[in-house]
Length: 416
Image (cartoon, rainbow, N blue to C red):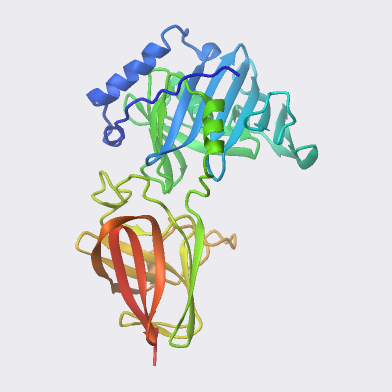
């Protein structure tokens, strides 16, 4: 496998959000264009490389190249541990997916070593076979329906987004529904042009990626300001995928990006517990104005990450001066510039009748039980990972939220 120098372009994602190209963004775009100047335009010569960051941490690198009807894709992913993938994709003459072989390799090994895992995807007419293996053991063997015009997609990959953007631009339309097929089966999302050089990928009402694209629809920058997974992607001239994977493998494992945690305490005889996920600062502005912050003022925040934060008590409580009957709830926080408000909400499950736990972007104020003000303080040093605590104080406790330089507390005690 050829090794290349990792080269990262300067980013100007704030200008992406404003829907315009600043001089910095234009310079970055010109640099990418120059690196591809020798490549003829058109899908037959399509190639590229992406670096994906979460704050100051690089979490995915990817490169791909097309020869005739075949794509070769290399990926390294960092979380929860370093992984290395190589995929062969065959396209039909109409540039739809024909077959895919998705392979996880041992980092530092040779291409001839036994695979850690693989999935073979074979399209036949309007259906496809997915054959997944872990080593030599079959883990998946199923058929799925394939919509006409399916494009390839891979986990932790942005090639599929680029192919969808290129198809939209080539069609001359303003929007379309992208239909894709990958190792995990079929998926789809909306693709919409927003101005001359921007595209939205609308996965659902709460998950929207925004990309700055060139005249062919190739992604130059991508940002996810409207999602909880606030990645930033930059197109680069090339990237050393295997070398990056080896470097990550030699370092301590990154772990889950926002690991789950729990807190249990006895408060005046009541058994109280919290279940939440812990996002990290990663060099970013956590709270503040919407133009720069992860969690902007005026927003109802999930008070954690991933699924909605859950709060359970087996006795009636007073949180602040508001009564919370025994039971299970979700916790949210209204972030104000001059103070925060803790929200206890009665909704636990998603509104789609699936029985799944509520996701942390699905807040619905009509299910609010109480809203109570919190006491705010500024910490002398920043806290990297968001933390919830129940700190006993005699027969009562303090519910404490700590992240970055902000601390918010509210008293909790048993209702008499």
